[in-house]
Image 1: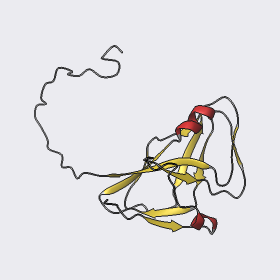
Image 2: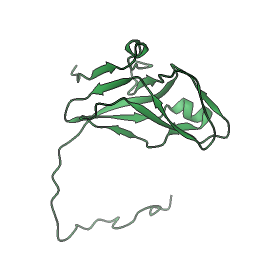
Image 3: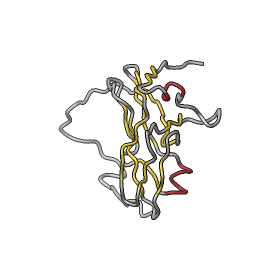
Length: 149
């Protein structure tokens, strides 16, 4: 099976023992953990950047996306504000997770909590071509709500 080598760079001593991990063999996302000195309370409507304590080296031609953890989002209303959060191959800073509390109760985030998942993907090179006319389709300019569903 082919794989892509991703560099994992711990920025704190505890992060060295917290490589992203999959919950099941068939999981697509790699769970990442909070790297905190103290617990954080996220009140309804608030947002916060949660440090992970690591940086990544992603090869050119690939990206990582940070996505919410579905069960946590369902139970608490915690999600990622910029879903998906794109991590470019040339970014070398600490991976941080932008959480928002869309629920109606305070949620406490503790060191070691799984706060997001990483999904990796290939990025296709593109070249834009300026067109004088755009082709027609049966959908046309139908946008938000156009299908009536």
